[in-house]
Length: 350
Image (tube, rainbow, N blue to C red; front, side):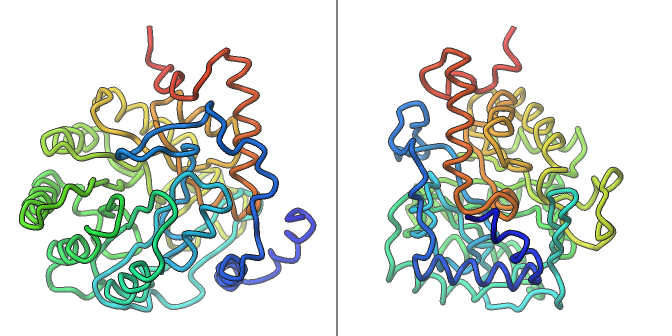
């Protein structure tokens, strides 16, 4: 059905189309009736102590204000991450700020952490308990005087209602946010998060979402700090400000973060590098260009234990989880494996 409506949807401004998608999910107009593989042991996994039906999650950015996480579970997602949420409500950058690159199956966005603020969203989640594994992605306000403290506010607000909290240091749309990839700043941030967790007597798993545009030496330094503080997982990766050279669409020069198919190879290489350094001690959630069974398969081979997507759903439609599972199952049967976890990191085995 989505393929029939896609050309019509793509005539609408991307941000307006996204708002309509959220409203449709709120009204339960979309269902996962096409998912024939629900409860299939081939996809079952455990993340942060909870059993998941499958390892496919929706990335932060789709449900920024935690409005439709339960309908997203109904669509078949194994886990859902909402946000990015800042302490105070903010509008984000001026519109237009989302661009659909149809020829490249990509998006460029410069939204700038538009959200209703931590207090409002906390109240919403507390009044609508999640029916699956829920991650909450936090970040600082654009005009804050103390970015590090903004992360601590996010942790204090959500530590008792999230299944995990993602520290977003990688959006290119908040000026200088990526400076947190610097060794000293990153160490200080994670150290402060751990101290705050101890104060709160919280065991909330901490996840870090990193940029795809980091240098090789940064990968090593980040990995050392992740291991030092026993961070639970890393999301590889966010949108890219680079990777424009081979794009076809006329909108390719728009300022912002690029997501979707053009990031697939870059993300897989980065996953491989982190996998070698983290040595199975920290979970890797792979993001970037996931839109099919084959693209999911490549992420697992590179070393991701779980995957997330967002742009893939824009181009493939709301039944994307069912589609990926169906295609992935065929590949896994050919491989002769009983569960997808058997292939994780297989590219690195002798």
